[in-house]
Image (tube, rainbow, N blue to C red; front, side, top):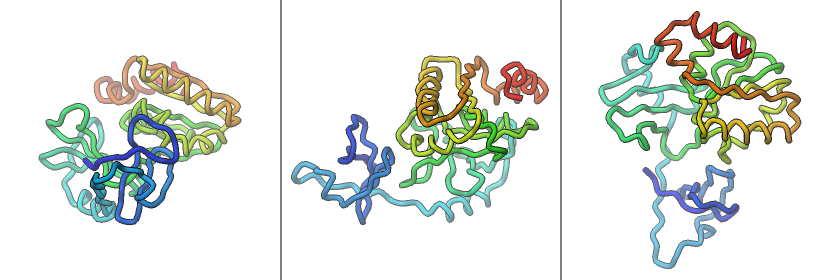
Length: 233
């Protein structure tokens, strides 16, 4: 994994800037600049981040056979499986046997964009914690736009904040998160930001069971019933 550096353009405790041959890029606030701005101690060597060719990687992934995984047909090999973004802008790899902190990996040198499942009208946006949960909800008929920022931490990350103004233009935003402390915190902070940006209605839905687990274990109609109870359909 590439080393990250503290961004010189905003205060942060966790480094979010990568160094490249032609300068740095902060994946938290989006700032760019020369490597000299990183203000490293004298003698410290900068580790240059490799920028992966996403198009080439996705072509390689698409050449892999598919397997039925978590209710969906996904490209996989003996080391893990891959989830591809619909516009080929990104992918996520689930690595078998890896520790929890590193079991999901993306392309080197690229920030993760939102995972868009469907684009409906401007009337309603459903933001769902977890790409597989969003995919599962997307199997149900509906007219809403369905997007997943990723995990709970991605909801209120500085990277995701770049998309909040786009989310706020919808007439209603439903935030679907796990019923745990991380999910609740993410939803509360995201709701406050969306209201500040002028979104007229934001609803929070805390769910005890992942949509993907319901789909795989109980079936599509059980998921539909659960979503109707939540007022999402």
